[in-house]
Amino acid sequence: MKQRMIQRGPGQQRVDGASFRLIDEVHYIQERAAEQDSRVITLPQCLLFSSQTGDAWLLEPADHLAVPVARNGDPLPVYIEETDQNFTIGWTGTYCIDGQAFIYSERNSGRVRTILGYPTQHIVEQTGS
Image (cartoon, rainbow, N blue to C red):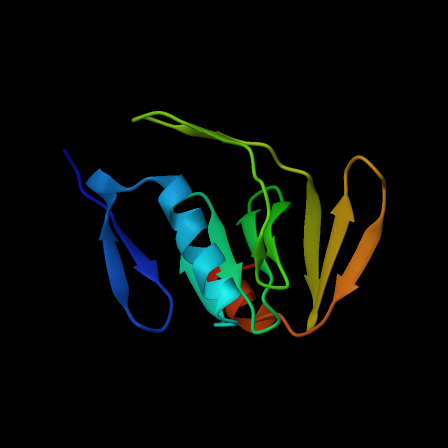
């Protein structure tokens, strides 16, 4: 079985892909957000990040899907269904990055938020978009 290593932020901590669980990574990034610690976690299909403002997000760069997982240091509920082989995420909107601005469009309400202070440059470097 091929093992993957998942890199977690500046500390260069790696997680063995054989024992990888997305929900564990979400909890980790929520903890980082509560500490106002800016981190980016790059996964094979997704990216998680936290900011110094206490926010955290789960992104799917290929289709620009997004779901907030923490706001102002408080964890938010996120729908994740996970098996040994795959996972399903309840995406709540889409995102784009324009320079230093992270722009989130909420699917249900149509509300659009432009947020500054996120590690947008690092996200773009990690996703290539």
